[in-house]
Length: 220
Image (tube, rainbow, N blue to C red; front, top):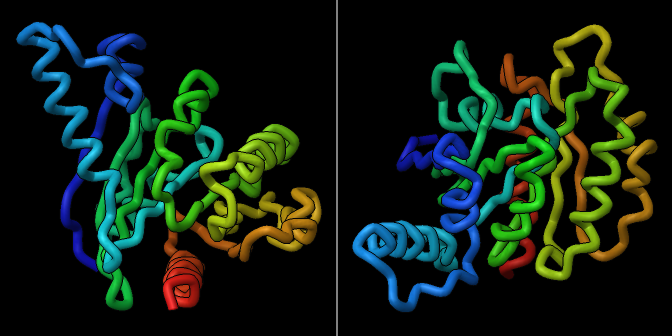
């Protein structure tokens, strides 16, 4: 796997600017010089969102503190010693089994989740990360996942659920999580649940192998 590029946008500027950056349906007529700069950034995002056939666009979602960014860094073979919550989004590109995987890691805080829908378009695979040790939030994460599965732009998109933090003694097994999320009722797409630890890397590659196989099968 090889790191290709990395982009981070933060909410630290202000919510309105962040919304401008991530919302595709922005009116750009009559813009000022400063707005022209924003328009350039928006153009870059649109180019990144369009993926040729040889590339795979992966959307990485889940609640805050689920381990999404740690997982992303694990995929890119980067240092995971210091991880900070994603306030905007991260993009990394890695090579795996002949595919270029463009992974979009979107922040999972409640105030950011309404912006998730801005990234649904052209998604090849959805990866949903769950903190297996945080049982108090199982209902919340289940509700968010159910809403994603109902999204028209994600219709039929394969989904991999990473049951993360299996290195913790309090972690629920993947089978228990699958039952709690009613994954067995999914009929409109292929799905997989994979036990993993983003911290140790255990199970991560197994999950990504499934991602590549599902994309391969879909494109044949």
